[in-house]
Image (cartoon, rainbow, N blue to C red; front, side, top):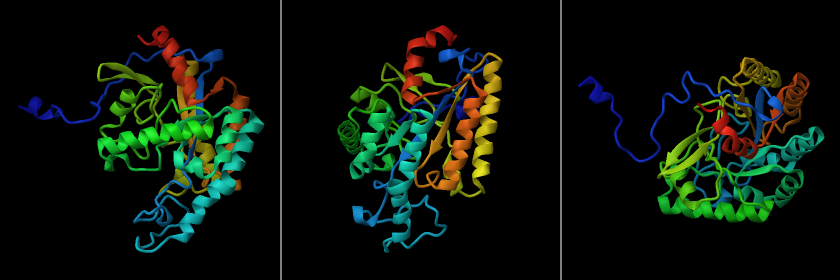
Length: 313
């Protein structure tokens, strides 16, 4: 009876996996035998968030402002926080990445790039990866399967136009719907998705009889904590959290079990000068430490596809 009560119901969406690699951790070999693969992720959402001018019946959150305006009113203050990201913050970050010759992954909303096409042009010129963050910064679980399929196709076409290449990765706002992963595999052309937070390494899953790669993301090393409760009190907190995470993962890599590390960035948040300074400090620290492979998610995914049989037991 007890075992029967613990049996998961047969419901739509991916099956849960509590085990993963377990005690049989892969002895991953990254390029140049790096101890850690670090991926910087720029969440480019500005201009695609909920806003009255876009016809929405609510205002967006996750800004610098600690109150919620009544949804019947237009929130000009929050709108301007998002505008900072696309007017100023994104350029500060892009110049920083060019200075350090680091290529990143953009979790990019298609509509955000349409509103500021020079961002897509700079991404293309600098070799940054466009990973689709949806057509808009949408809650995909509110869409029907057909609506989600349509928005997926709009996003692909739009990012192809603004960035000169179609997205080969996918990441939903906050989380996917029960249909998202099946729709990605059904559509084809995707090397991976990042709609999971459950590991420090990529892994394969099966979707409708086909092998599909997950490159997990993280909300731990993420600048959203500048505006979330019990988050970063200062840029030093961001730097220390990322530094400590890198140090521990580096130790594990030196012991024979290299991992990956995802660092989430938002132009409206870390694009503020004082916070960019902490990101710069982390880049200096990681590069001076050595044994760190700064890579796009697509690079990590392709490496895993090509080499996983060499180290996954």
